[in-house]
Amino acid sequence: MSGLQFWNPKTERLPRDELRGLQLAKLRRLAEWAQVRSPHYRRTFAAAGFRPEQLRTWADIDRIPFLTRDEWMHSQEQHPPYGDLPVVGPESAIRVHTTSGTSGRMPLRALDGRKDWAWTAEMWCYALWAAGVRPHDVGYVAFGYGSFIGFWGLHNGLERLGALTVPGGAQTTANRVKQIVDFGATVVASTPTYALRLAAEAEAAGVDLRGGPVHTLILTGEPAGSIPETKAIIEERWGAKALDTAGMTEVSTVIMFEPAEQPGGCHIIEDHFIEQVIDPETGREVGYGERGERICTSFGRSTTPLLRYRTADLVVKVPSPTERTWDLYQGGIIGRVDDMKLVRGTNVYPRAIESIVRGFDGIEEFQVRIERIGERDEITLALEPVATMGDGPWTQLADAVRADLAGAHEGLRFHIERAAPDALPRFELKAKRLTDLRSA
Image 1 (spheres, rainbow, N blue to C red):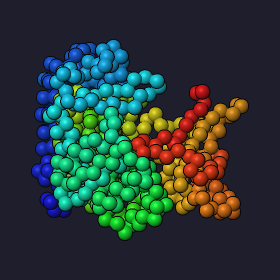
Image 2: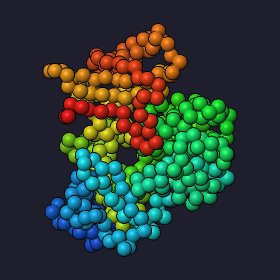
Image 3: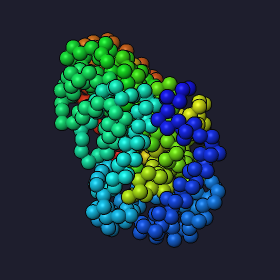
Image 4: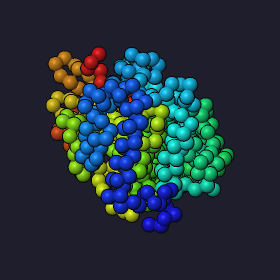
């Protein structure tokens, strides 16, 4: 592996013992900063009996109390609008980004200072460079620019790297396809779902994406970016390589990326983050190869420090097999702790359903519905086949999908419904394909 494939060759190839030393030194400084300047951390550190000077060995990290989303949201409710996590007020920040609200509650609001935002772009440069993006490229960002963090950092990362950057906000899908062609885009950034939608729009307009100049798609926002079946469809329809990334509003930037030369897992940017994987029930750290909840500590966002944040993302960490020494999340983000649904004693995960559905040709979109009918839970999969599919092929498709779903879910029977063309929702940002009506 050539040093030219690294954005920061020194840290990306740092021996593990030196990397641990670097992380521990940065963690001590971050904890000291947060304790002195953030009312939240001053309070929670004291309640846990933790002091930054106690961070002498790697095992001492567990002394730091977890931060949860509910705590952050409660802080905002008690001290609106930004809560007591930030170390400064809005007068010292230059940006605010939000998450989507949940359960009718307000969204998380995260402040960034000027230095924070420069760091956000730098993190995206790690991912973009590893994906093969270079200054001569033309990057098209298929994203509705708003308060959601989305691809804001990627946009700035493309500029920082030196690529010509085309913001694709406030456009219809048809217009975005036209702009991708007109500007000669070589790199396109979108969610996995929207990459499929763009491809469908291009096909309807007679645009040959496979023969075009796009060589790389940067995907983020959904676990589908690491589902092999979904990626295969995207790559086939675009004639380009699709690479996964993942980040979150809580840190303002990307945390992990899939390099072009090694698809199938996302490297953690370990010189800027500590990522632990815990058993979500016990809170204890699990070993390589074990599924668990990822816990994030970020060194770069100084305005809103993040220490041991419980993300609710499900991951499996494995050691790197290459010259880039950073650990990987095998398969990227594989789901959410709260995504799992129990249906008649069987665990059902949205990612597992998508991996099966995307393995079949002729399916444009799908939706999953769980409801209580009488004394029994029922699960229904609505499939939207291509408009030209006849009744015979549809029956064969439905039977095959039903059988594969049952085989992967301990014999659980899925009801299959046929949706009319264009009847199911399309998504530009994070797709929501599972609805649980039982609580209603």
